[in-house]
Amino acid sequence: MSLPTDRKYAASHEWARLEGDVVVVGITDNAQEQLGDLVFVGDVNVGAALQAGEVAGVVESVKAASDIYAPVAGEVVAFNEALNDQPDLINQAAHDTWIFKLKPENPADLDNLLDAAGYEATL
Image: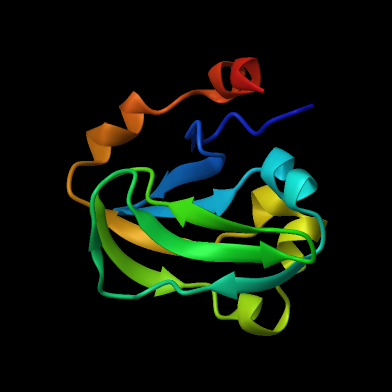
């Protein structure tokens, strides 16, 4: 498996990449493989203030549903609306498809997440 090294990873299978002053969040390729064909991505509340580890949304596949967690504390500022009609974009390119963006309380909190090698070691 080749994981992008330009981001951090949560043990709960989210990836997080700082872009300017927001953190872009998606799920890992490993997570989408485990879930299978996604049929729904959502329940993300723009404007919600979340603590690290709190549920930010949900992904549902033909065989399971799974919560998506905030990798760091912050306010949700965007949801990828394209996923309303095409949740399978994540199946096609998990590391290129973001689910939500949040404005972190402290961008340095990303340092508490795993790097690519650390995440890979948890699999």
